[in-house]
Length: 297
Image (cartoon, rainbow, N blue to C red):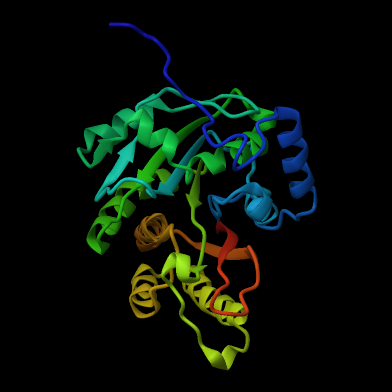
């Protein structure tokens, strides 16, 4: 058996963000320098996964809450955009490349997760086609650069889970979330509005379309802040808001609920909200972004 190290290339570098390490470093530094760290140390963050020109400055609000001096393992939960998946899947590689430096997958934790029988394996093709995890890698590398040889990542591709599966995975991940040396990164954009997304909910009482979108998103965000997975599911059923990371968010909320049962005290706050553009008519389209952090008290 060969011990060849298998790498996932930074397949979206050069398109969704710059492939130049020094340039990328300067960009990330610029965005992070404009943000306060008020929720440090974060135990989990929710941050967007669009091209950095759209959401880089929003994501900085979440990554600024990461404390690299205590973080040793980073779980990255991203939704599957390209392949139908009813469970969660783990990567088949050892290393995730970024223009800054390479990130190592934690094979020990992967081993523990495999043993549960709850996971599938994603092919390298699926892994490299998907952007929901990759868009968090440069930011993770940047946030952790002062301790870059001292941490590992645990990428998890999250499928279209039923509510009961979200509960099961939430329970499974709750023991990892309980550990202060672990950080959970939950990858999600918020409302995708417009004809190309086949979603055009509009509440005229809010004024312009973009205000209605913001109102809808903020309703969902405040439910997430209440840390109630059932209310979040009900909100999605009622409004069908196109929050692409709803299943990773559902898993996180269920993990939190599990820990709250055991008396752990936590709070989640959103720190930033942005839209790719302001929709004013039916031909427009936009994607919303939100960044927030979970702290344990």
